[in-house]
Image 1 (cartoon, rainbow, N blue to C red):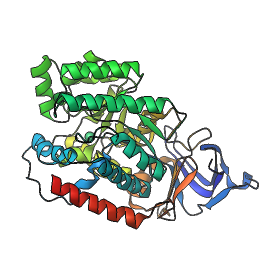
Image 2 (image 1 turned 120 degrees about the horizontal axis):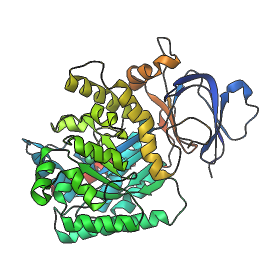
Image 3 (image 1 turned 180 degrees about the vertical axis):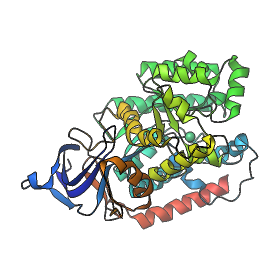
Image 4 (image 1 turned 30 degrees about the vertical axis):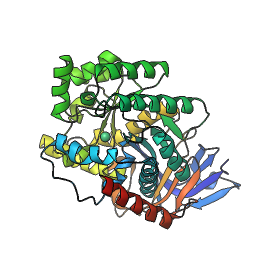
Length: 443
Ligand SMILES: [Zn+2]
């Protein structure tokens, strides 16, 4: 059990419908939960660990609602053919890379991505994993990395028919086994969803099996939706319907499910996503990089869809992703004032709701009863910081500041920019480079 932790004398930013700046406040975390937030003078002696945050700014730990830790090993890879479109990106890069992953690669790529997350104040990660030649045990390998870093993570395996029936079956089993294991323990660090790659690589048969298993396990699904035009074209060819309609027909949508991207969805599909309570996760950096388009988040939030923000592995820095999301909306709508409220809400409120559904915890809040997940920034505001302009300071100031300390469930994972984990970081990085070099040779 983690001893009580007092974060003292901080400037606490409380985002939300009524944003507030709490000056010289302290936060007490016990048994993983925030038990008290009050002016520092009101605290008597507190036993346990004390962290002085005077002159620093505290935000709730950030949440990445869609990523792929295995993508770590694509960094610096030069032996891939340039792609002309999204299908080419998948064939030339991602499907070659993930097919060469071993279980050990899954562990090391996750470890690096999670350590990077800590450095950027990201405390919860919702991952979507694929390693078709090493399916069984891949989620356990990622789980090992999650536990060694102390973060929270929701894991799943991307079931797909792209590599044939046997590997699709292995993917179904890997999800089901892992979900059962998560159900069987009282644990708020590692959770699971049922992973599916995307409609265009899933046959009716596999979708039906996944839906059946997922229903029996009382779990939601995590799937890419209408990321490229090809997903819609394939759904039309296979089923004579749109992607979201096809998923709805199989029972994949729902208030515990995550549909990543949703760029090429029409009004009817948005209405289905809203009516079923399915969360949509926007990943603008990845979408721009793959040249697949920019999701109409204004139309989606306007219809009541719960919209979150993910990075699709382009970064572990959620504030960087938030900024790019904003510029993307400005460009797409040719309007420099559009999307600010929607996107700040996506990152700071909706991601917490999406992750909260999976973890059964109050995440993303600095208040009594919420999880003790906190990011402390080295930020001395050079202009007045007030309730009314808190979001402006987050987008234009905190995003450019260093994260000083990261805490999950009251456990300090990084203090004064140094990771405090029981890991030999030099050895981990050396080993990751070796794994990557060998992986690239096999590709
Ligand atoms: Zn993705």
